[in-house]
Image 1: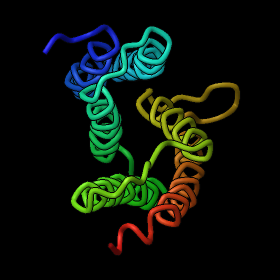
Image 2: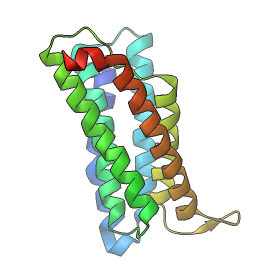
Image 3: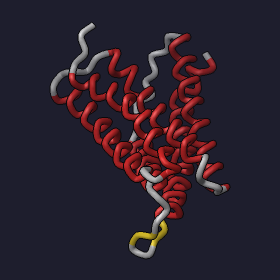
Image 4: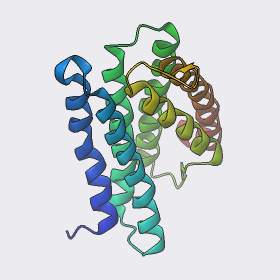
Amino acid sequence: MKLNFATMLTISRIAFIPLIVLFFVMSDGKYRDISAYIFLIALITDYFDGYVARNYNQTTAFGAFLDPIADKLLVVITIFLLARSLDSIIFILSSLIIISREFLVIAIRQRLAELKANVSLKVNNLGKIKTGFQMSALVFLLHSNIDFAYMNLHIFGILLLLIAAILTVLSFIYYVRNAWDDILG
């Protein structure tokens, strides 16, 4: 199979994950800001892989399969990474909601595939907004804990993650409502 540019961008997002981890933990977090910038670059590749795939006719079944996996790996591993330095019940609960939803969506997609149901679980606008809050929160939380414009970055990131968790529940309800009859088979 020949890889196109859009799929290579998706693969690069997965390849950035070890670098994010490395810079986050290296020298007791001395370089964690670099991990935030690498995470941001990974987010940019997420935007461009979709743009390139749609606008340059590079959509493939493999790319459609790999893209959400790359996103989930990036989010879940980053949350686990952050859990070692953030001692916040809001962070923990928000993270549990977000990670649980990721696994539940995988389970729903698996169930629908088993049933050969022709139900599409495409991202809706609420899911896109949720992703925006979630990814912004993770960028702020990966940074060193500093004050910026009279606001502590980690507190701001945790608040964004809480909003993302609420939107996560709402978007999950939307997915389940659209596929409920098919899920029950």
